[in-house]
Amino acid sequence: MQIDTHRQIDRKLCGRPLFVEDGQSRVELVTTDRMAADEAGLVHGGFIFGAADYAAMIAVNHPHVVLGASDVKFLKPVRVGETVVAQARVQEVKGKKYWVSVSVSKDDVEVFQGMFTCFVLDKHVLD
Image 1 (cartoon, rainbow, N blue to C red):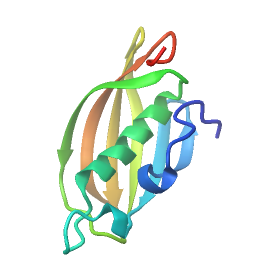
Image 2: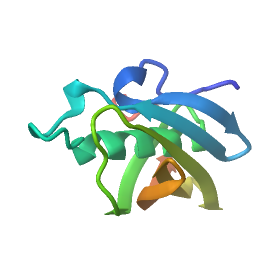
Image 3: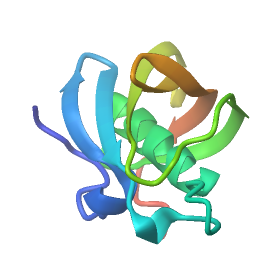
């Protein structure tokens, strides 16, 4: 499981890779109190999006991959302490443009789905 991108990502905030191979990936995120949006323990959607985005990036798995756009739906809430799994699959590639579908589930119930448009650049985006 060689990961060639996003090597310094905080895996406690964006998830831990479980699988990366041939345009696919799976990332597990264990939610914590730091992710709570309110006193009821609702996890802020940005953390779920972050896990999905990370899964999309490592499914492409190129050192210079960046996110260009996304079309996402939050389907169910996630509570602090729950574990979610993001599964990503490259659906189409045209030149440097990749479309990656991502589904995030907890206990086999889908809580998030999205299509991520990723770009593989010739050099780092900050260069």
